[in-house]
Length: 337
Image (cartoon, rainbow, N blue to C red):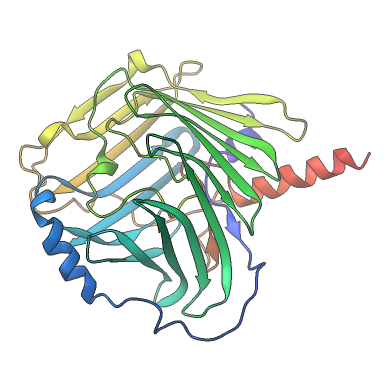
């Protein structure tokens, strides 16, 4: 695999502020955190199991890793630190459903996200700049009759993601488009019935900090992942294709995986997924009261540099901003011939 292709596997999709509104503060429109206590009391009896505290993805061959961290208050997720460095503070309604999230870079409030519902599904995310009514982006979600998220699209950044599911309701594939053209596809198998650690985050309904929002939904964690990339002409190239028969796992409490090791069928490259938990006795390392400190808390883009304080809508297991820009520039140049 060429180095240029290896660079394509990474984060993030950098959002630039394209939509503008008035600068009025929205502090009075955003519900305060006091609702969290009411929400927690309503669902506390359903949040007594294992709670995921960290997810570390590691690709040693390409010297790349990403880590997400989760913390909880009264049984609900109250903060999610995404792999690209943003810290999301979650707020809930009285039924324990996500209502708002605030994105911080360090101590700076970057975005406020409002979750708009139709019945029980979140059909739109409105991303405001900081604590103003300046609309940064609107992300629309579409669901099928089974209430599975099948399509997401961004009004400001011109991306879309389509999702397909297997008969068990697990994510079979996601397909990412930029400017209406394919950029990346991921496909999954579920030979082993590992419990999905991302369902062990009470309160979090889906993967909202990332463009491929349906990633991590479903009952089971994947046994293999295949990543396909597309060039400026739409030609396909396989970044890696993991062999599910070579996948191994160390399981912890309640059948949640603590370490899953994958092997690329073409070159033997190894990728690992590691998880830590709280409130989860019986694990290999017995993470009863929290995760370990073994996961590095550095967040890097494809070039290994620290993430700057800009607004992001990256992919999890996805293309970097730099490579998306290169891809779109190459496509425009080809069309202009």
